[in-house]
Length: 185
Image: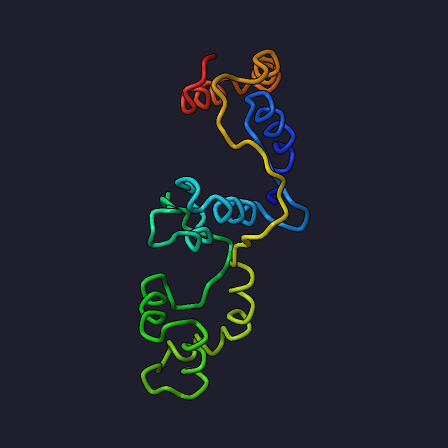
């Protein structure tokens, strides 16, 4: 995790506890995997909206309105991608060939429709394309306890929340969060 985020994690945990908001984790799994597991677990039970800027989580969306991922627009997911292949070209290639595996088979078999710099860039990215799907695949089976995911009607501990605001100077962000959650101050 980024160096500037690591020291904030205990504060975030304390704030969530003071707000009465459940937090979950699972050893060996990233936050994306926890989100994927929760979305999958509650699919069909309740409407699930995953609000994120992380493009990796778009794979959770389905055609039925069971899981929606309103994309908020993070331009980087930390992966380099394939040189010369942007989002539109990648989507076009997958639509044309049906899957990444089929595209790679077409490249290996010498499909004449893939030529020039595009072919060279895809061939050069072979090692990357071997591992990228595994890196971006979001787990749907992380071991998570059953917890009440209902948002609270009021903060669980207003004194602790005020102490966090005073100690760390985060009164404005806490106020914005209370407003967004429609919680009393």
